[in-house]
Image (cartoon, rainbow, N blue to C red; front, top):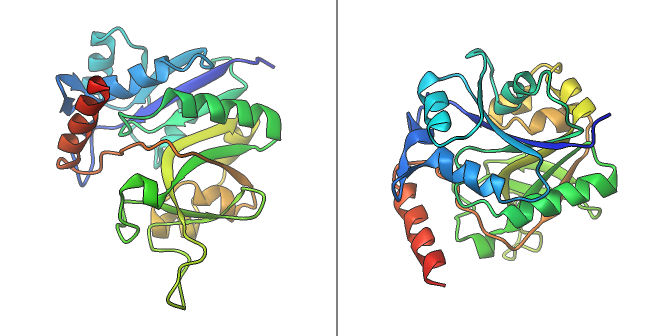
Length: 247
């Protein structure tokens, strides 16, 4: 089996909240280019590709000399799209980097890759404490995750979890990043499982793994990313980029 590590960025044009989001400009560059360039800065990755069902996104990626593949428009989730995109490509570990995370830290990608090669987990992801993120736990776009004592996910939700019955929240959730790592054999099993009721209810594909008894290891990081969920988030990302340049 190949020891290569491959990153795939699933990107679709249609979005109920933000149509055309991957091509939205951030300081003069399409968002998909920002994500692609951040991934390319990770030395642990052997290859980065964009998987899309839209010719406009495909052409934009080729326009900045990136690598892209066209995939079926019928896929329900980004993970399903990735499984098609890697057919015929040699890789033992596959990273799923969401196309709306233009500030993703290449160092976190490296940490997750190293952890997945050392801990035996089939699937991994990353999360950051809410108090570092600046996000509101009440926001349904900010996905929450709670973990067991070994660092494996117990549940992901758009709702505030766990419920604080008393005045103090002694077990605060973490903000889930749009980042996944899969061993290849697990990814091939994952996409054969039907969508479960929890996944469909929350619209969170990682719940498919939990519903089928898989364990999802969570890398705890203090690095902060900023996902773009709405057009208003673009200005926040641009402000962050300006601050990074000033350092």
